[in-house]
Image (cartoon, rainbow, N blue to C red; front, side, top):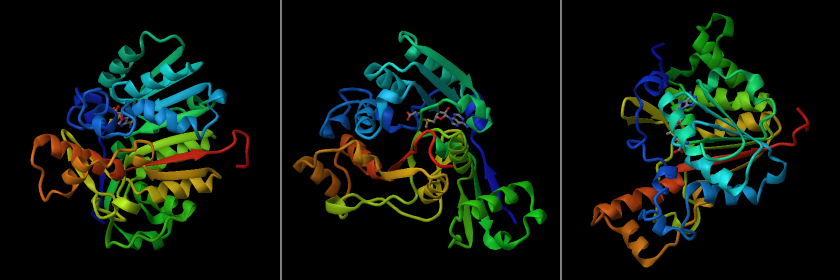
Length: 319
Ligand SMILES: C[S@@+](CC[C@H](N)C(=O)[O-])C[C@H]1O[C@@H](n2cnc3c(N)ncnc32)[C@H](O)[C@@H]1O
């Protein structure tokens, strides 16, 4: 079988110098003059909007150790610790360049910070032992994805399989992942391993967001905002590396297996926008009139293309 294992680890370790090519939602909303911010009901940064949303759902008074994996420029964490000082903050990033940016963004804040330069898939489990809340924002799409698998190996004996195929076989068997419908299918194996790792470490609250392959627009804006949906992760070609959209239903299966309650939705749930007459015209236009309109249109579509999962479980609840 001619499957391919895609990894972005070398790019992140050696070549990454800027996130400018990736325009993450967090960075898009960072500038208070950004035209995208102007479309929002509450004109604020990504970190503040996410903090407010989580604050309504999680017992922040009990959260003392906060972990962020793949914190980029450190702006999301900066917003969080401005809102509430946490006793302990751990930042894990594979990119030495971005970890330096995070150190710089957080240097003036009191508290016990620990910065770890490593691939999260190699983080020792003991580092996660007392973490209360883990944040992985636009990070899991960077983890390894295996493409062009044909499903016949799923009915083989695992002892006959190569290590990569055996790993995939085990995820299907352990978590009851549904049989793939495509003749050649792709799997976000690194994202599944990352979530499995957090669940096995009993982290009580986990927030993940990423570009989804299963995104959908429900309700009033169904005919106005267009996103594509697939049951197969799709490749996004970026500078120096490929990312893959995430099959969130697989992550949900893992969370439920470990007894987590799950909230899933588009990031528009916590970044609500105002559908003004101008925004409606931008979304309806056959093609954008100005560069700014195009930026806004992509941004509004991204609020649905990006999904999030919030997993929660009592710290000492059932296994
Ligand atoms: C697309 S950026 C997102 C940055 C930030 N969270 C945001 O939303 O703007 C992905 C981040 O994940 C980090 N990353 C990628 N692969 C990783 C891995 N295997 N382990 C830890 N961090 C990783 C990158 O270095 C970067 O900081």
